Length: 302
Image (spheres, rainbow, N blue to C red):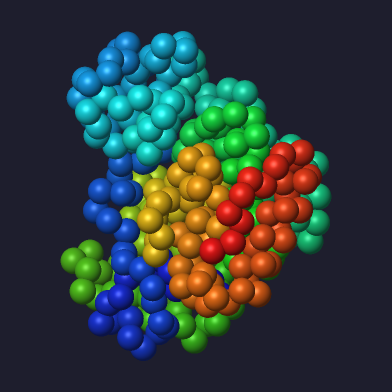
């Protein structure tokens, strides 16, 4: 079942489309974790416990690493409080240690993928959320990459589908109750990309977070590989869906792969909603962690 059914809000305009399980993205979630834009140098302060920090503030921690505030906080520890901070590179570029998935490993994971889903597109998208697969130990970094790819692989049939297959649903994803309407057209907000992003309000939220006008240009998610991957990382890093935490937080805080499933599909799969779908995701995860040479951790199901 596509992720469109979990991101969408329970709105009266949606009654004719599908059974939905979660609210629309919160007003604060999307802009608070927008894309990083590291420069050759950046303004930072030395992190001080108990000092109030605003979203976007950059600090240098006691370990010599830089962190950017993804949410306002009263001086939480950047290493411990990964919901409030993400690693940041003040020297230019992102993820300086390199992505934990090589191109050969990516090809091994998705041997039959659609050519649209390129490895270079994924690597380019990492700049939007530099904390992704770059937080914690090497084991955790690889585990998060495996978890993300396992879930989006499941959502897209192994990175085969770029757009939603049921075209009859296309006109249903325009919520006219939103003040910004559907400027790209009534049927323009169908599922696209690795998370099958759909609904005008989700294109608006993701676009605002990424600094891309997806509300007016939703087609970018099916024509630009990096943009498509960024929408997947947007959901993974900022949206709780029907769960209690973001998928990113579930992995870096060692809550288990099962919690990523809950945040993506909730009771539609969890709590015996569809154990076959859960097992499919788990099978992907086990395979991908083996390819990356890391462990799965516990709590694999939900």
